[in-house]
Amino acid sequence: MSFRRSIRTTRLVAALASLVALGWVGYGMATLLDEVAARAAAADYEGARELLATAPSDLQDDPGHALWRQRLAAEPEAAVDLARTQVRDRELTLEHRVQAALDGGSIALARGEIETAWQLLSPLLDVAPDRVPGAMYLLAGQVQHQAGNRHEARQMLASVRPGDPAFLPARTLLGRIGLEAGDNELALRYFESAVRREQAEPGPELLAGAWRALRLLGRDVEARDVARQLLAEHPASLAALEVRELQRRENEEIAAVTDSLDTDAPEVLDEVDPGQYTVQLAAFRDRSLALQFVQRWQVELPDLTIARELDDLGQPLYKVQTGRFVSHAQARTEVARLEREHGLEAFVAGGAGR
Image (cartoon, rainbow, N blue to C red; front, side, top):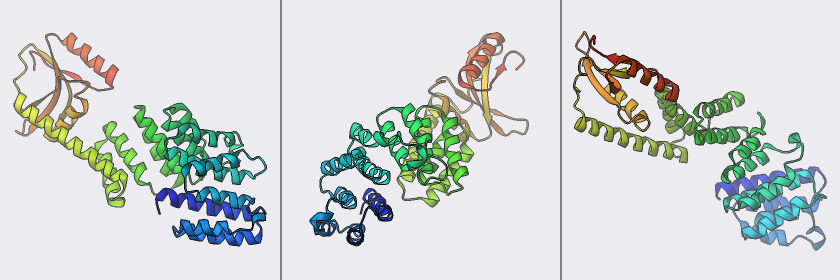
């Protein structure tokens, strides 16, 4: 049974229990639907359909029977139509309508029918938040995100409160949206707050998101620790595959930068001419770290170079520099621009007194 089918079965079994408790389902119908649920959980969908069809005609209008007809519909269109009918029926309990909306909305979203999914969810989203489970807002956020409406998606996802089972996945998606928007600090705060508020073990999607945010923020040591945790705890997850693929691409890019530097710029670059100035952004003992810095910033700063020098103890030092300037004032202007536009700290190097 697929993951999506498993979730839907769990939802509807829970819905059945709620309907029994509320008196919607009589004893005979509850016994029959218990068996229907058991067969569906065992992936015996045909057997579940046949059993459901044996219900007496006077019980087939029962809400529980309608919910399982939706769940077991062979065609997605039929399931969505049944969900729409139940969501609109104000005679049904809120719990029943929510279950129908969640199941039908999930099917519509999986089929790329964004408008249909929203039509199933929106009638129930005006209900007081404490009466609607977080799963509704999570699914609504997924729908709006799929539609490209970031602001609306954030509003829906932010409505999921701590302690709700949907809180962690909602915060994970909020973090992903932050990454898409280029707000890496905000994304990382969402990822970190999800675990801190719930005191739960982070799932693979959350770890992968935190890894990307840390990498984009230049916090490479922390990012490596997160990647190790993800690959150790969730090695077969899609998130782990994503991280491995991104790491592979990054290694190829770094290798390409290395080849380019080795070919186009010798390990020991020409000394800056006396009287010329340059701007230095960083210095590393490890050349691979200097290469990573170049790779990180080469799109915004295409003229970065690495200058190899020896310190007083004869140990190599790799300095990342940019630009050649004839005056100290020109170099200082570039330092100010780098700080203003990119948030980089730098200083003027070179000159006659070098």
